[in-house]
Length: 435
Image (cartoon, rainbow, N blue to C red; front, side, top):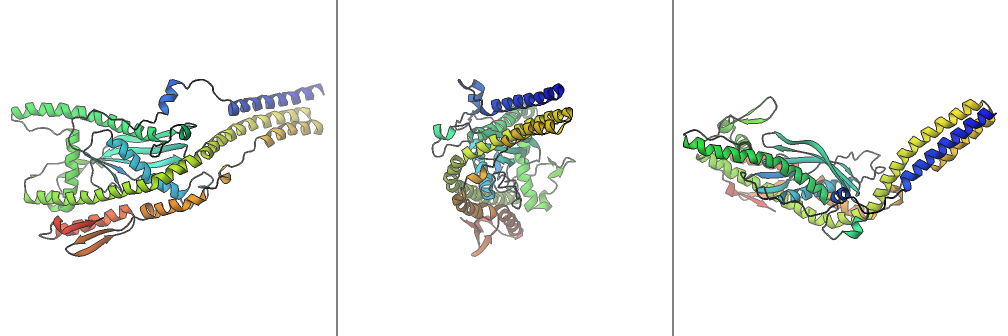
């Protein structure tokens, strides 16, 4: 009996120690000033700006992010994901990144684009890995017009500190600004390395020219040339198809640079300019979307934040409880086995059951009813993500309408522009884009 009693006491002791450890993790709140590194993490400055680098004119495209959701999944609501909100975030986040990139003060233009079909020197692509109103995590990469990766796929995230909305929020101020700034800083770091090499090659070219040698293209020059040549090949493959070749890495490499004073090249550039005009229209439309969506989205962030935070903490508690529960069950099982009696076994199981009953959790999502706002997000998603407002073109007195999602519309546009280019005497002045 003495041995049985000791085993049972041991099981109870282990259970109680585990419970105390759990409580300490759940209720312990740090006091005192925030450490410097934590303060730096939650800074919400508008964004970084740097002295302008010595680089050629470059066009930067932020492709609308992939919302990364399966609308048929039954787990979306359990995970606190609303499809229409996530679709809104995919476009809003791209616009915020665009603003942060613009503040770098380095690029000739920065635009939100429906896809990588849009002509640009650099493309930032990404998808939303997690978004809860408390935490935003985006996986993104940066590639250039050649298909060369500048920034490999990486995750950037930010967690909004407790009390931010009460202490810092004003209309238009973004709780996730540190995230947009982090991405912009990474872009600038990648650009700065190549800018230094560009300056070095440019200086050496002056010496080469004086010695009667041909100048060399820097990496940034190659990217800008490739952007132009890709469109030239698209419009006139019989003339410019061999200006580029694909490497075994599936990247564009310049074979030669054609004469840029010919009539045909100037015509290609005129069509490229018209192509850019339509891309700019989409960027304007995404900006209009942002102005419409942002007040609604900011209210949603503020309303949902406490529930999202509590859900995260509840999930963390649950993981801890699972670990503690496992220890308790092992201890009670050992006590029951050692006791070798029905009475001792019953007592041991009571220890585990008492703790187990206190470790159950409830979902907080069902306690929050935000469905009144869903109609607003439904409308935004319908008009900008699931479909895009039709784009009308007037061509020689006739109207051509582009329909469907924005990326589908741009595909239709490229097909139309290609066919129009093939017509002799066709001029871009005959195409009017109706916004």
